[in-house]
Length: 85
Image 1: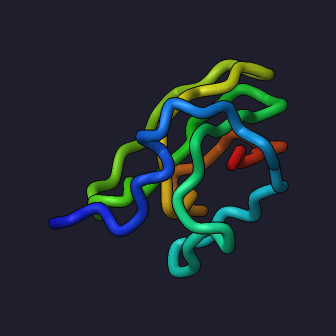
Image 2 (image 1 turned 135 degrees about the horizontal axis):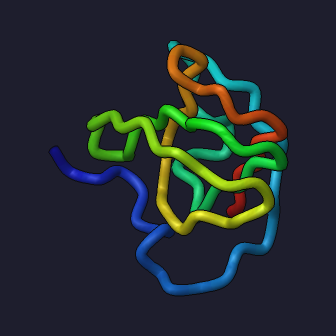
């Protein structure tokens, strides 16, 4: 499957960030993000731009440089999630 938005491959730093409300059906409003941070540790269940899903354990206040088009509520236990663009 083709990746619809290639901004995550640009190598440029993030210039914006938004709070994320996990949802099993709604993609991130800004499109695929450049990275994700959670203020409290746990798991983040994401959907990559390719459509593949993965649940990733994360530490608090660490920016993870992966592109996600959705943060799912099912499987996400981390809180204070923010997406960077």
